[in-house]
Image (cartoon, rainbow, N blue to C red; front, top):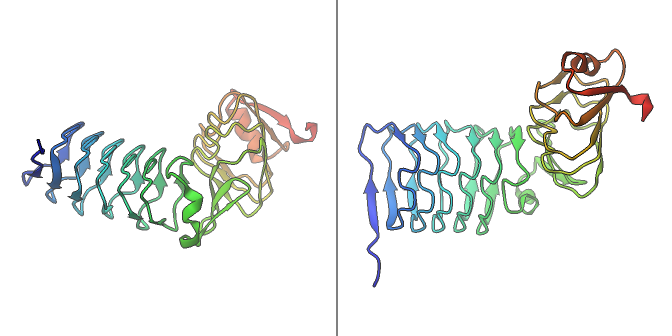
Length: 266
């Protein structure tokens, strides 16, 4: 027996689609969302496998974790200008998505945001992206020819427009970050299994959780050019090597959970 698919219209005045609002509603084929909605909750449309059409309101501010997970027949999605972060697994396993164009307002793409979107034919990334997980897309390198400001070299994805190292996904356990990189992004070395990371002179900042879960015993060698390190940039098992009298040494003294040694000992 053929299933009768349905179209859904959400009432005007609704502000938030709460967690799992339409989760696993397999008969929903299209949803009309009013302009009043500003939040789509966690897994709100997850496993709506026949959802093919949805237009997001222009004032939408949040698309939370797994909101459209496994919407396997969804072919296109518009990301409103108010959205700045694509959350974890937001569109994971939307295997029919063919085109993803992210406006300049997007600055962060989290883990598995578009993982499993194997039907992607076009991916346009914003120039000012400051954080992007290595697992955000099924194959980030594939789309570089149409994203001129992004380079993938020696396992590192670099945004050349703002000189951020977005992530490392290479096989080498000894990594040298080149001088053209000025910042290390959020979770740039997450799950990278590195042993030694040397930052060349020129790198200025290290973002939150940049070296969290990066390996069992990791040595990070910092240049004198470092000007700012987020409080939770490192796991406690990371040994930091830096010059005496540098900003990095002062940071280590203020964060005693981290080992700090003179880089001349390496």
